[in-house]
Image (cartoon, rainbow, N blue to C red; front, side, top):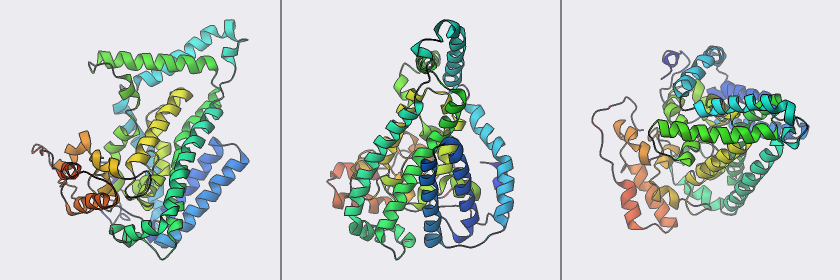
Length: 414
């Protein structure tokens, strides 16, 4: 837990699950910072105009949905936490330096080899600029096409979506407006988060001008170093698991902070909960500012563009599949039941569980999460009502893992 979060006078709430009118200044600050970073990352005029239009929509949506209250203490909170951010960054980075060793070592060796062979190969195709922007466009447009298919499915079932959410705890966040606006908001949230995850890399790659030689060398050396460190650590050889051990593993370590700190919830994470619980808003399990922070703190910008694009694509696809908590609409909610993902309950206004389920579930048990709580029973019955769910999957979803009595925690489920 970040120490300086405990005694901030403006932080009256202890747990943060949704925006309130007095978050307006903080929310606007996050959009302004995002727009400024976008100008550096995307130097195309029309691309930035599209980003600015999307941010204006997000601001108008916030005002309509949550209202506006000018909380002047937000300014002192911004100054204090912005000054503390480098410390927060290092507290996340330093414990992970061994796990990140293949990333920065692979990049460093690739640059060293590039320097050594420059005199011999500088005139060859290998030293031509690598078209990383084309790779970004291909990955982004491919996943956006998939997200658009989901958007169309949601719009076609917008009346059902509205009725379903009105029958859930999300009804307190619904306003008297056409459901399509909620759907479009989730769609834009997902796209902005997707683009944001590339921002640090796009800026770094533009400043360092990668070549084909560096791209190939960095890819090969990083993979070999991941393989070597895996063997040395005695974990066996599973390079795929290591490379895709991803945003989620780091994100879950800080997830509690994102829900107990006003600054980090509003700036980093809140957009992830302000959108309807649909795969449309999913990107890397984060809000748009956290999507910029995550690749920085994991040094992902040092990866080759190819490796980074593959990892990001896999992670976004997994997260989109795992965040469809409105059943009966593509890509459907069955997988959340079969994978025992209680993260759905978190998106229906419960602080717990902080994890997705599976291997991380024990930490939620230690904090007091009941796998057969009333919200979990409601959710699994709702999915079973609209999709073909076997009784054994329902029973397994509600089955409580053996608790670990050795650990306790202060966070209580809502």
